Image (cartoon, rainbow, N blue to C red; front, side, top):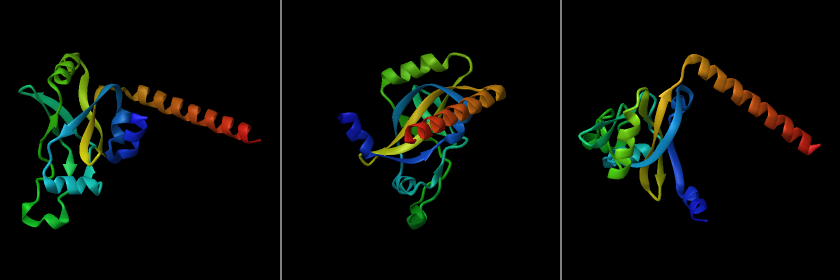
Length: 159
């Protein structure tokens, strides 16, 4: 019941579709993000981009780099810088877990989506491993066959 209520309150602002294609997602974390007022308003309008963004550890904190949030048109001179680095909010226990996992060779932190839960902006951060081009082709083929099987199954059920 509680998770159903939480899903009803969640509104996705932006997703990183390229990340799901280019990376294998091993684990994910829900994080808070430190934003300015004009950034929140731009995010509510889905006026942002996660395509080339990544997260990194610096001084025991997690930072998000490369996330582009367009300037809010009504904010005039109090606007934000679109590509500034933003701090992600995690518990120390989660940060230690991330440090342990990302110390493994080939793993990186990639933001998967930005969404609002009960009016608060959240980032879903994934621990990811890069895919090779043949892995990407295999994933696309698998997805296509599953889609075709669902399509076949749904037509059989209807008749």
